[in-house]
Amino acid sequence: MSRPKKKTAAPSANSVPTAVINRLSLYLRELQRIVRDGKQTTSSQALGTLLGITDAQVRKDLAHFGQFGYPGIGYRCEELVRAIRAILGTDQVWPVAIVGVGNLGRALLGYRGFVQQGFRFVAAFDIDRSKVGTPIEKVPVYHLDELSEVVRRESIRLGMIAVPAAAAQRVVNRLVEAGVQGIVNFAPVMINLPEHVSHVGVDLAMELEQLSFSVVNRRDSG
Amino acid sequence: MSRPKKKTAAPSANSVPTAVINRLSLYLRELQRIVRDGKQTTSSQALGTLLGITDAQVRKDLAHFGQFGYPGIGYRCEELVRAIRAILGTDQVWPVAIVGVGNLGRALLGYRGFVQQGFRFVAAFDIDRSKVGTPIEKVPVYHLDELSEVVRRESIRLGMIAVPAAAAQRVVNRLVEAGVQGIVNFAPVMINLPEHVSHVGVDLAMELEQLSFSVVNRRDSG
DNA sequence: CTATGTGAAGTGTTTCACAGCC
DNA sequence: GGCTGTGAAACACTTCACATAG
Image (cartoon, rainbow over all chains, first blue to last red; front, top):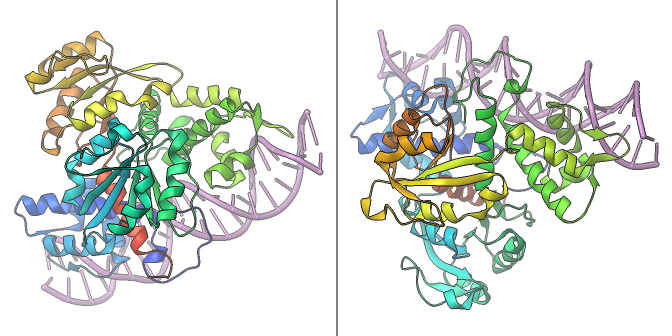
């Protein structure tokens, strides 16, 4: 997310480590599955085992945000799901824009996991006019020049970038100008943004490199 | 990636923090760009600034693997690129298999970033027989039942999973049985594997959740 | 003067272990 | 018996600051 800054030890959710937020997403995923499977409650130990971490870690993570457990019982799953969604901000539906409707962009538009977690694509953009006009997965495709207007009209706050690396920074600039507040970047380049815009980078080749390393150095790694 | 295990502080590459390996990929990416731009050398400070980290961090990271710098000069980019690729294991070409040729699978098959870093898809698999037989992006598509045979024949060591969550564990089991040594899992579920198989999980919805959190909790404002 | 490599210091994160509650 | 929440201890990671080298 944002560039490194000094940490003024603010009290609330501001000082929470990124790793904790990441695990929150994992807890949520598991809890949702547990609920689907019909279980009412679970424990820090059960959750931890599912994720390969300790029970203490689970409890400490949640403690950043309040008290959710019941001694002797554990956690009520549905209640905790609601709590975590509120923390992550996914108790609301987020309208999302995607820029770039090549292979990856199309795949992302069709990915069902986003809707399940409260994200909905409301607009796609491309610089290639031949791609403009025909909706993909029921999402309208606009020309990049219309970005600012559409972002405002649809109250879009989050954007995803699935364009070639060379074009990424220009797209970022346009998104920022249009007032987007957070960006997921799939292009394999570092992007520059103003302080007030959050970002997450996903580099698919990097994931394979991590894997390659642990295979070559296999000894532990699992 | 690795499930938590005891850390016997072994000397070599085994005791290197995951975060360092992650940054190694980032250094590589930047260095390759610097080389393309025609620069011969760079410094820990320049690299650090590009990545938003300190110069000391860059030097410490590299120090895990040897001495690559020249005092007063910095690092020779091409040399460092070669060194990092050797560390990550991407100085060789890895044949990769992908299971699941839905939206996401197809997009991954067409993603050019993999080839650039030394990964090559040599086989795709699906359970849907209507998808079998017609190559995608010049990669042959086999039925899942042929997995074991093809993996052995093509010496495949890495596999990517782009199937629905409910099918992921079954596919993992097959890949492991076939002798694959590392797995990238795009299905939003935890998977169980034996100790000797490495894995990396990528959950696209999680990335958006991280973003949503940081937008909602962005400094002050409101 | 520039820039690396590295012990030592500083910070941050995880685990331990136990009081308190069901 | 089971389980949470939490200070304190243990551990890991990052930054500092400086000796050393070109």
